[in-house]
Length: 343
Image 1: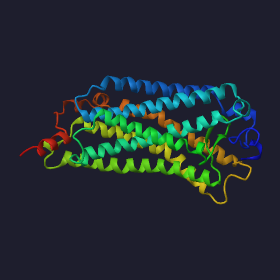
Image 2: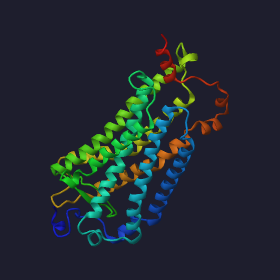
Image 3: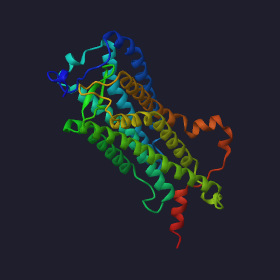
Image 4: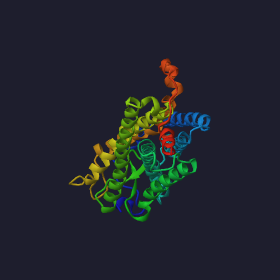
């Protein structure tokens, strides 16, 4: 616990900003506009998903279930964190006065970790499901049911929540971050802070790396099927290509938005000598870098729904009318299943 936090709570540490600087940095209009755009984007994606949930393909239906879980996660993340940040920017309330016991700060820290890690883990789960469906069709049932897909989404949420609760159990700490409008994990030299920071960064990087590996293999397999000797019989349907296009877009967005922050967290907690001094103070440069990387990461919640909205066959066919004249082709999974049943 830092000297200035002994009477107020463990989430307060020295900051490098004045009230006038907070007014200049913390624009309520920008924060509110950002949240509204993100919420509207996710609501639009949910409405589009609602119109396409009745799919003839069970594989497609399970994939839409994963997408629905991802959009719900992004929407709720923007709604909860946006409500706190916009309120703070609007009235510039003092955390010491409003939250002396650090309950709100800890809640926001858990929310930030949960809604930050969940989309990355969901992306890895979706990549794994498509990898098995395309490259290992005989290693699992012909189609993943919606119930099983929702169970997977629930497991991902539970894992992300368990990680977010670790600081409440003594592993790491949540503290108020520059410019005093949000709470997040502490980039300090204490063993608990280092362990929690590395665990968060590792799980995020592992999820992105696993998605990259599995999606690359899946796309290569689809390309091979398209151009193989039996392409006429085994060519995947447009929906399978559409699913991989959407999944690849989600992976690219997650990589661009989250990797800078994850790498920065790992580098900062491992830096020697420590970036944070004994009083809990970070350099101004480190504080500003963390804020910039966090803002870049939050774009993931806005861009995710647009990947699904724009990477649909209906939109692509409007841009490329020639694709609508293409003959219908058979699905890779049903084709292989039918061959397996031949005596």
